[in-house]
Image (cartoon, rainbow, N blue to C red):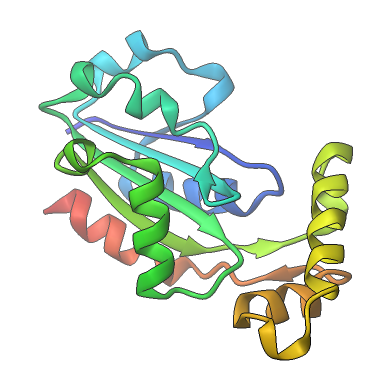
Length: 175
């Protein structure tokens, strides 16, 4: 079985997971910028990973727009974000990024990544600054646990990646 791991990473957390997955599965690995849909013909298993951007998985449209070409292959998508692993996070991300029909063909996983403001590009820094200001203007009792956590780590890099987090993906691909 031939496997490819494709990723798009803004700050390195998704890339780290993609590399670990590719290593465990002896898979080919590519940044999404090096991939076109025709390359995927020769693979039985396609794994796509992207970081979250306002609950959207960056770059996942490579998979979703081409789902009809990929049917019959094992398709895995994973997203990385700073939020803790919770069912409501997983469900929100899955349901925002994949239609009910696409979910029949795509197995989704959420892997906790991290946050590093210093690695963001200028535009993303601007957006994160706006988000921080919006959160800071809320009353303390209105803040969600994710917002409290975001404020706590805004000025210091945090890395929640753990190689054990890929175990469910590896098990699924090997099943």
